[in-house]
Image (cartoon, rainbow, N blue to C red; front, side, top):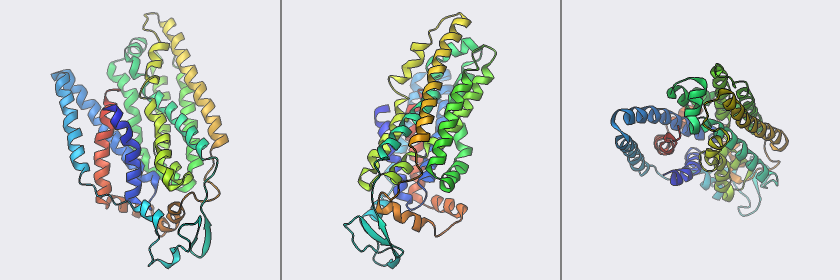
Length: 368
């Protein structure tokens, strides 16, 4: 199930942007992530209760029913590929956007020549993003793989440890709209710096929680990392569409989300059990936990430095015709509220939001 659902994530992002073009890529993909977080919280709590009271089989049946419902609803989504249409051709009845040389790297937009050219920096940008996204997602699940050890060390319940993972889901829901607005107003570089800085800060805060009575400190570090996630999850398709040609957007988006998905899978999921053995000596556990937290903080710091060095706001020239036209088409209505209303009036997009949330978070339930 995890194998097939991993491919569903970049596909969902791209489909959402196609259905909502020329609206903000960050908002459309962000709403998909909100749906995933909401369903993730519902599924995690519900399945846990079902398994505790009725056993494993009813819990699995519960998830299978929702997966089947999501698959059925997906069949009703129409393939309204607006972004691809914009790359192929400009409507003839729109004089201000008419193309003079359809097969060339130049066209006229509102009376000025626009050069279409990709930057050599694009691969470095997407790879750095994928790495710090993986670092953030690793911190999401690092407690879940050895939850019994953290329970014994801090003297807390399994439910308290579970909330160290679920706080990632909970933080995303109220913070999506403010962060999406910031992405539109300040751009990719500012959001990338904000996300990687918070990821780095959260990792270092956890180093201050190496005593059994300091569980609130590790909660604080995890909450900071969960806020960093809000600045990360909406960016993959934004990076892909801003920096890559139309025929490479899918590949770039897949690379961008690959890091996040890799953190859920081998070998990263097994790093905490290898570094932190299950022993009954608190001082010994604190030592091994410090190794885990130090490595994580060191990697997060290195990636923050790379973001400062590598990330730029956007390339000198638009990477595709659709990207160049998006700014013109999207600027006709400056109201952010009207922009959100337009998204919720898009029936195909709403169906995708519902189905994506159900399909994407079912595998993640087993990691929490």
